[in-house]
Amino acid sequence: MTLLPFSPFLAPEDPYQEAASRLQGELRGLFEVQDVHLRRSRETPIIFSGRYLAPEREDGYDEIRRRFQPYGFTPLLRHDGGYDQVLVLPGVIPQGRTGSPLINVLLLIATVLTTLAAGADLAGRGRLFEALLSGDAGRAGSLALSGAPFALTLLSILGVHEFGHYAAARWHGVTATLPYFIPMPVGGLGTLGAFISVRSPMKNRTVLFDIGLAGPLAGFFVALPLLVVGILLSEPVPGFTPGFTQRALGSSILVTLADSLFSRAEAGQTLALHPVYFAAWIGLLITGINLLPVGQLDGGHVAYALFGRAAHYVARGAFLLLIVAGFALSMTWLVWGFFVLFGGLHHPPPLNDISRLDGGRWLLGLATIGLFFLLIIPVPFA
Image (cartoon, rainbow, N blue to C red; front, side, top):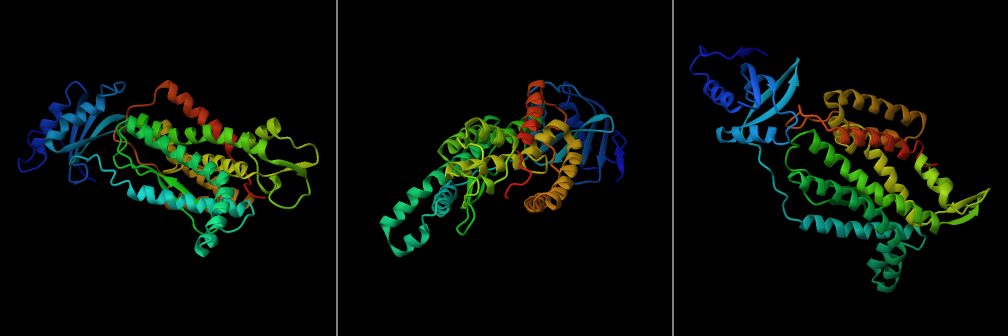
């Protein structure tokens, strides 16, 4: 790529010559320009190199962006080759729209039905959809009630997780949709999870960190007490008892600790699992997996906010460990490795990639790494 140093002697027909001169003036007081490059690139035709003067200001990038908008440009702040840089992107990035919530409501209703059906099946009471199709309202109602503890527990954890992301996005002025729940009509847990769609770019690493971490933390603080409730509702049975018992599930450090504190099972016994226990266990498992420091997972957001582009190396290492764990511990990790690879290992930078996290967020980020190791289950299913 050929870089053309900025100079008053450049050909006057260069379409970005005048724009570069005007934008350089708009950077005064916020960015010390030491060099200007005009590039034959439609993506970022102008690059200012020098020193960003407002790394600690919350509104420093916002002010640069506000000054550039009347000229039809959007700034991107980067650090490269020992210099801070302002990459000038033609056009103004719109905030985006959330759209009608109708599809969100319909998907939620469908997911409530499918998780109720999964809960009834898990409780051994029968198939909800067969009762609905046969027109047996009484039996359908009875099955729905039997599936409610599982469905409400799981959807509460997933819902609070996603609304944690949504609330953080709204707090920072980022446009995001309401949660989309994904129903799974046949088999499994009745759902494939939930997600929100962010419709405007992440402004800086602080925004990226807060939105990425708000979901798993919110979900965790709901799932943990529900796990304790599930332990108390589960009945101790002899260790050799067939059926859906604690022996069917793997355990994390946190789950093992909760069992040791609240389980009524004695030596030689296990727990016949209550649906609330299983749903909370699933919620904690999903929270742990989401904290993997890879790509667009919540842990990927947090890792990039903490380490910047060095997070790409962390992501590659985490992916390799997933593959090793898939062959050495459980095929479950190969499935997650596929989804991670499909979504991409590397996290894109925010608009302002120069400003760093404050000390409090750094400590919280390091604590989150510890939470990951407390939650992760090496062999999820026996």
